[in-house]
Length: 81
Image 1 (tube, rainbow, N blue to C red):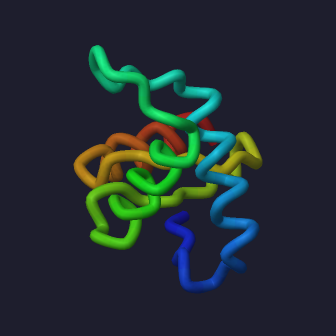
Image 2: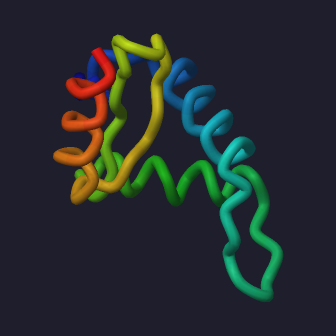
């Protein structure tokens, strides 16, 4: 299920994004990028709709996925139920 970022408080949204960034350990190239900068980059992608905030009812988790992977996410969820 897609979660609208407008339905969350700013604090909750930023906590979700921070957890995602810390969990994913994303690589940003040679230059060091602060946690705050990474969080702002993900927030910008969410606002643009390039990535989506999704809730897995099966796993009871929230994740951030690229918009292109939404079909794969939904298929995976339905196959595991």
